[in-house]
Image (tube, rainbow, N blue to C red; front, side):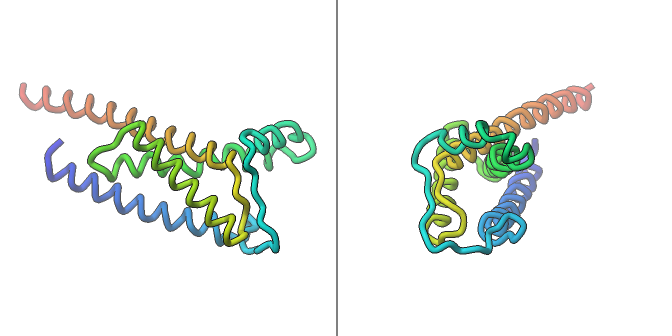
Length: 160
């Protein structure tokens, strides 16, 4: 890939990353549909790993499949773009870097939810969000590999 194309690619990654962060802030702290406008009197938190995940799986019949999927898969899926865009926007991306920054962002979100009492602090959410960020990185790595193979084939054809 040429330097100019790479600069455009990185700039696009930065713009998409910024738009994603704006969406994330809205969805996690302001979205009425997700009940984010209600501030509770008490602090709500879960510090026991897998407690809420097990609760959702155990009571899936009573809660309904939509609620279970929205919570478990939703917490994963909401961070997939983060892992993808942070890798796309940065020059030095990597599995462990994405893992660390996904966990750090999720910890920050959960901490803000705790102190603002919008939502709750949940270690299971941190785990699921981090998994989502890592899946985003894996998706980025696969897409990059496909793009590189395509670029190599294109260069070989142009040499002929």
